[in-house]
Image 1 (spheres, rainbow, N blue to C red):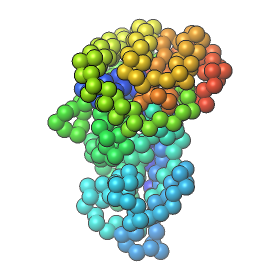
Image 2: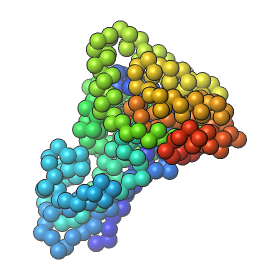
Image 3: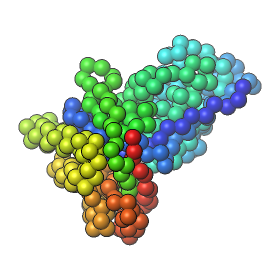
Image 4: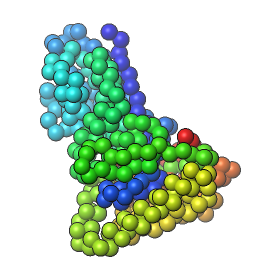
Length: 319
Ligand code: PMV
C-alpha cells in the first residue's frame, strides 16, 4: 500500500483574536507558505492495531499505545479511529513534520491535527469530509487551548479567508468565506518569543472575570472593527483595513496580550510604510502581521529584520 500524505497550512488572524473567544466575530486567513505534513505508511511487519507515531521536530518516536490518552497527537489519531469506527486499524506509522513555528500564533496545533486527520482517514479508506475534519480538530484544540473559539481549525481546514463567529451551543462556529475584492499582501514577522495560547487565553479570562464590564467593552469594540474590516476587504479598501488593524492593536494592548518585542516590530513595519500592523494570535510573543503596500513589501521585510525579527514571510491574500 503506498504511503498517504496530507498537508495543512498555517493561519494568521487578521483581526479579532481573544474577542472571538467571547462571541465576537474575527477574520483569519490561511498562510500557505508554512505547512504541517502527515505521512501514513503501512507496517505489514507489525500486528494489526499497532500505530507508530513519529514527530522528528520534537524528537518523538513512540506508539499510540505508549502515548498518554490526553496527548494531542494520541487524541487526534484515536479520534479518527473512533469516528470511522475501526478499533483495530492495519498496522501503520504516522509521521508528522511541520514548518509552522510552535506557540507562535500561526495555528500549528490545528494544522498538525488537520494533516493527520486527512492522511489517516484516507489511509483507512474513509477520507473524512471537511466538516468532520474541522470538528475533530476542534476537539483536539480544546487540549491545546482550553476554551478555543474554533477559528484555527476552521481556517486551516477550509484554506480560505474566513469571517468567523464562535457558536455557543455547537462545536462548529459560523463561518463565512470572505470575498476579497482586491488581493492584499501581509508580511508576517516572528518575534522569536514562544507564547503558548493556552496561557494568554487563560490570563485574559482571569482579567475578564475581574472586570467584566471593561473587557466586554473592549471585546465589543473589537467586534465593531472586525465588521468594518470585513466591508473594507469586500470593497478592496486596503488603507482602511490597515487603520482598522492599528485600532485592533490598541485594544489588544489594553487587553494585556501585547509585548515590547511585538510592539518594536509593529512600529518598525509602520515606519517602513505598512498600512497597519498588529500582533496576530494569542500574543505576548509569537508573530505580528503588517499589511504592506505591494511596492513597500521588501522595505517592511527589511525593517522587521533590522528590528530583530527572528524570521519573516510574505503572503498574498485573495479569494
Ligand atoms: O495563537 P493562536 O494561533 O492559537 O490563535 C489564538 C487565537 C485566540 O483568539 C487567542 C484563541 C482562540 O481560540 O480563538
